Length: 221
Image 1 (cartoon, rainbow, N blue to C red):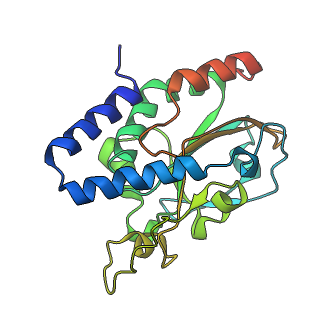
Image 2: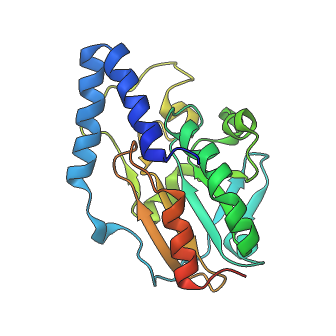
């Protein structure tokens, strides 16, 4: 039986406790705690909301619309931070192994969504793990903002100069803004049926939670 995401993230954090500089570790823990404290569910898209049209850009550069994503049934959007994020490199292959086969059988598309741009290496995470589902760019965090997922660090770190590897360069925003990890299920009528948001990026939606929700909602084909 595969390890849960929680167990894998606990192992990642344990390794950081052993190996990271104490100041770096403290900042990481404080940042996550601040996001949890500031999280307001009332600001997040909710089940029952109707989603207005949007478009995303696949890692190949191809544009896909909400209509296309739901043309054959519901779509599950998995919001993640960026292609080099260690936690995202645990979560996405885990979902590929544990969630995608069920969703495929249920006639539900699975798409990873990040502000990381195709031209700055979004496809790296897709290729690194041989993902069986596409990843797409949400330029400028437009959809993440609309869904209430976007955040910036509370301590407002300085903006690096001429660093092509920092988050603002990878996303094209010129800022530290990222989406909080989330799973959002939208049906073929463009109505949100399930939402789970993780303000702490080392605590993400388990596949079993999504599977149970799909079964309860009777969305399986």
